[in-house]
Image: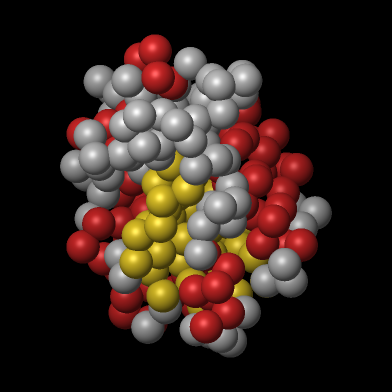
Length: 190
């Protein structure tokens, strides 16, 4: 079964302690999630998977920002997640050289407003392995949409993070109904 690894939102504004909306930074560091994402990317490369890095971002003018959104509505006030800035650069600890493709998303899901599904279909991918932040938002949204698009979905639990361990674990419990929850070491056997 052809596989793609999708690593989501390990960008400075979200996961670096100096990020402008870094609510997940401490949990990401505590879990060593970026190191585990790197390990997953290395396994994906070795196994010939399509490694896709995904990041959220808006045009510097914020013309594409949903101002009414409780999540994104004030990003322009902080200069957060503006494309082409350090904030939307991948975290320096993420080995982005292991990515085959980078996709920029304008909302929570990696599918919304992107060419992700077209790329996956063109490559005849049937199985998705997902990791990143936040477990409660981008991971939940992307995994749910992937499930509804008929992909077999696996979530690399230890390469994900959220605001807190409690939020993360609640997300994993919720996703068990539609995805297989695994750990990075399980990727070797896939």
